[in-house]
Every structure is written in structure tokens, then in C-alpha cells.
Amino acid sequence: MPLLNQAGRKILLTDYTWDELDSLPGKAELKLVLPLGSTEVHGYHLPLESDTLQAVKIAEMAALRLPDVIVMPGIPYGFCPDTMNFCGTVHVSAETVTSLVADIAQSLYRQGFRKLLVYNGHGGNKAVADTGLRNALLRLSAPDKPLSADFKLYLSNAYEKISRQVSGMLKGRDWGHACEMETSVMLVLAPESVKMDRAVEEYMEGGPDTVWRVRDMKAFSQSGVHGAPQHATAEKGRELLELLVADLAALLEQI
Image 1: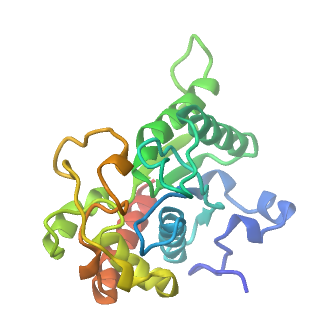
Image 2 (image 1 turned 180 degrees about the vertical axis):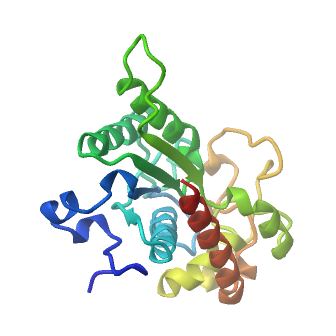
């Protein structure tokens, strides 16, 4: 059964036929969400799909609360130079992510959509996703004119706006990757994929409240963890998930 929002409309792009989508009323006012993730190491205890799964599920949960949001298929690959030496991490270049985001935006514009939000679940994608959206506007704008104003493009990075609340909830001395925070959320979204008996506490220099050093994570971390995932609980995950979904839904209401 398709997922339906409060207005009875399907929320997943791929549940529509092309003509159903094309005939939706007020297409220019519909808000499309593109979840952007990665296939990347998340310790010994979380699956490689963790970033993508979180971005997709949070976007879907936010869309269910609103009448005019459609969620696109998530992109499961990202810019991962710092974790690419862990087996299973699939690193794609900054140019690839930038081009993919820009190409998707242009494709939607051609079809009459005018609002797109990229919901990013992977830290390495922040700058490149932003560049991709800016490049899309540049391509759609005349060289001698201001940037196109009729296509509204947005980027939201998961966890960024709730970092203060997160820091106040957690027991570990820091958080950031495959940590207490992410593990708690995954215990709610995909509990069968979490191996709590394999969760280990590990830290690297730098963190969310400091200047993060760009380096090969495998040279500084055995597990691919920065944080204390052994303190994760589903109760904590439900609280975090509500913060994340409410934050995204509020942003979508504003655009």
C-alpha cells in the first residue's frame, strides 16, 4: 500500500505513474524532498546504509504530516574521502555528487516543479550538495541576468539544527559518527539491523563543537566510530527522531 499524507495524497515519487504526477494540481507549489546519504562504515554495530536510511525515513515521516510534500528515492552514495579505506564504504567524487544534484534539480525544473529540498544525512555531502544546488541555478539563469528566482532550492543537514538538544541528552563525552545519537535513532528505524553487542566507544580528536580535522579516519579509528554507541536506547531514539522530523516538517511548511 502506498504511503498517504494527511490529504490522502501519495508521498513517494515512485508510487506515481508519470501522468498521475504530471496532472497533480499546483505542481509548482509542491515540495519535493531529495534524501542524500551514503554507503559508509558505521562501526561494527550499524549497517552501511545508516546515513541513507535515516535521511529517507525522516523525510517520509515529515511528508506524512504535510499535504504537499513528495519524497524522491534516496541517493545511497556520497563524498566519503575520510572513510573510503573501510571495506564497504563507496566513495564518489565531489564532482559526481555536485553534478548529480544539479542534474536532478534541472530535470525537475524542466517538468514544472519549482521547489526542491535536499535532505542530507551524510556530513561529507554538505559542501558538495550546496555547490550542486548553486550550479543548478547558474545553469538555469541567463549569463547577464540575476540568478533565477522562480526555482526555490534548499539544503537541510540532518542533526545540524538540533545539536544543542543532542548534546544535552547523551552520556558520551562527544558524538558525531555511528555514535550514541545515530545508534539510538537506528534502534527505532531499523532495530533488527543494530548489533548492540558489537558497539564500542571510540573517539578521535575534533568533534561537532570544534574544527573537524580532515584526515583518513581508518588511521585514527579501528571501528569507524566517534562516540559512545553502547549508551544508545530506543527511548532516546524516539525523542531524537521526533526532534528531527518536527524540524524538517517545520522547514517544509515555511518554503
